[in-house]
Amino acid sequence: MFKNIFLKFKESFFSVLPIAVLIIAASLCSNEVDNGTVSLFTVSAVLLIIGMAIFTLGADIAMIPIGSSMGSDLSKRKNMVFVLIVCFVLGFIITIAEPDLQVLAEQLQQGDGKNTVLLIVVAAGVGLFLVVALLRIYFKIKLSYILLAAYGLVFLLAAFVPEDFLTIAFDSGGVTTGPITVPFLMALGIGLAGVRGGDVNRNDSFGMIALCSIGPILAVIILGLTGKSSVGVSETALPEIRSVGDIFRAFGDALPEFMFEVLIALLPIMAVFALFQIFALKLPKTQVLRICFGLIYTFVGLCIFLTAVNVGFLPMGKTLGAALAKIADGYVLIPFGAVIGCLIVLAEPSVHILTRQVEQLTGGAISKLKMLFFLSIAISVSVGLSMLRVATGISIWYFLLPCYALSIALTFFVPEIFTAVAFDSGGVASGAMTSTFLLPFAIGACTELGGNVFTDAYGLVAFVAMTPLLTIQLMGLAYKVKTGVRTRKETRTAPQAPENPVVFDAPVVFFEREEGNANGIDGYESSSSEETAGGDGAVRESPNCVNVTGSVVNADKVVDTPGCVSDGDVNAAVSYAVVDINADGDNAVDVVTSVNAPDNADSDAEGGNDG
Image (tube, rainbow, N blue to C red; front, side, top):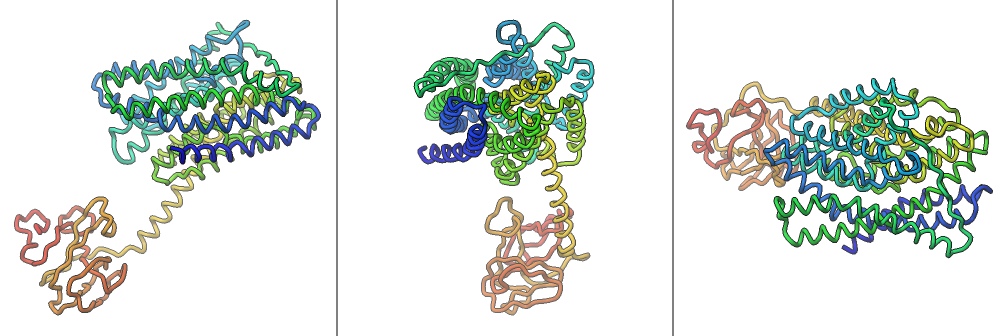
């Protein structure tokens, strides 16, 4: 346990340090950012490291096991209506309590308070598309088809909605997949897909977050079309820091509020899990106790994390954005945004949860480091483009439509696992750091430049969620091309199967196919004969055979003959003929080993050796 805690703190420290150093350095170089704000941010960065470490540990111990076990139980139930209702309720109650969405609802006020209508509509959208995600797994529908249909409908309706609502709609899709939603939904998807084996299971384990991100976009667009809801930008009161006591007072005043929000967010998950445990799961007491401790870690870590980003990062983002907007007509925002976007993704706790799950479920084929590298590039580009919009006022349509069109087109050419991971990454990357630092940063810069906050600043979360779709899928396309080239090379150099089976007139060594055999080569297990094909104490390699490392009893010498491929030490080699004995077309020996040739005869004429 202590080793895990140390590793989590180490990971958090090196994730937060780069972005913290960059922001502090930029703030100290500007006369517009006061020392109190810098001090508040510095303390927040330290708390962010602590909170992120504790939260990710809690997610591993509690959130992921809860989601996985519940998903596994739901997948085995025959009453599909019951399962769909449970999924919708889960999606609704988890989303409506998601802290990231609460932040957006507070920034987009309705009247004098939080935009409750937006909260309900977005939560309903997530619940609905969680049902769609379940139906996709159940009916084995390819993810590409659903993405094409869903985003086709989104952009069709978006053509008729005011651009103010368009940016808010796409931002809503990004903020719903925050620190509470991501680990639970990922684990739920793994559990639901667990009943299907192999690559199908692995592919279905991802894509749930991708679909749940579409629901809020579509729901808010429909809300905008009704014309029955209005939004306004709230004014964030920046704390005045004159002493160390003011810093602690700022955190002390905010902590109870976020403790209440996190508790409200976790209670539905805890309640549903308790019901499942009592009536269905019946997990061992030790495992339940471990999950309870994990929930405590999750609660404490998330309280610290959210307090830090809201108290220190949010005011710093707004102040620094306004300060940099005064330099070179705001164009300095573009390179600064690109650099800060490259680093800030490392400080997103949900990103680390996703990349770790991807690496585990793909057996290292998509490594965590490679994922973080491509995500950093993606977010760098997205924030840079967002700052370009802030500085110039370019319409978001010029970016959203071509990028999503290309992303959907790529889904038909890249391996499905990369498509699912790419669209999941888009939702995960736009987490708490984006909504509490990058978005206020863009709002502060846009306000200073006199732009339209709704059309120029909002939409940044959408950009952060958009660019990973392309970068991860391009990584998948490169992987597919590389794999194809390697396969063609192996095919050209592989030994050809004989046109006619090799006939032995003496006992020989045969091989039997065995799944997961660590002792043989390519899943074949060898057995050797004391007597050899030549009868002279030698291991004789016949034409058109493949030499495979193994053990030979009483082999005095090895007789090489043309047409054999050597693989290993010839002094410890046995050989087998590449003969498709059971006519299944795989050109591999399919028979059980035996010492005497008469015992290997095909007595029942079924095409295989009876051994």
